[in-house]
Amino acid sequence: MNSPVSIVVLWDIDNTLLYTGGAGSRAMARAFVELYGASDAFKRIEFSGRTDTAIFFDAARAHGLPEAELMFERDRFREAYVPHLQSALIESDGSGGLMPGVGELLDELARQDGVRMGLGTGNFRGGG
Image (cartoon, rainbow, N blue to C red; front, side, top):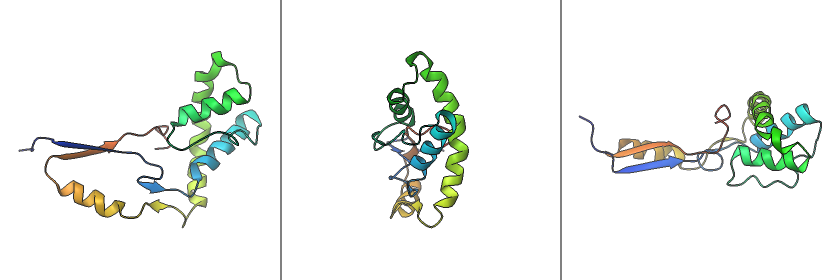
């Protein structure tokens, strides 16, 4: 019989569970260049603590993409971003991985009765 849930832990991915050596920002920059030709799209865009959608919208607005097309463009961007992320993660080999202590903490929480865990992240689904 399952014990009742008394604690729910939601994890973010970037710089909480994992360190990727900046793979996400590199992949976003590459996808933006691919789609819109702007190599400095994220130069003044804050990444920390923000959703991928919000990050993209700020860059898109800064580079003059029409407001009425942002949702369509976000979907196009997401499709271009995921393959770039896969490549950027491979390039980061050795500089990424679990944040210190995360593996042990996850193991310990998994052993606890009444604790359930999940992701509460702003990453695009394919990137997460």
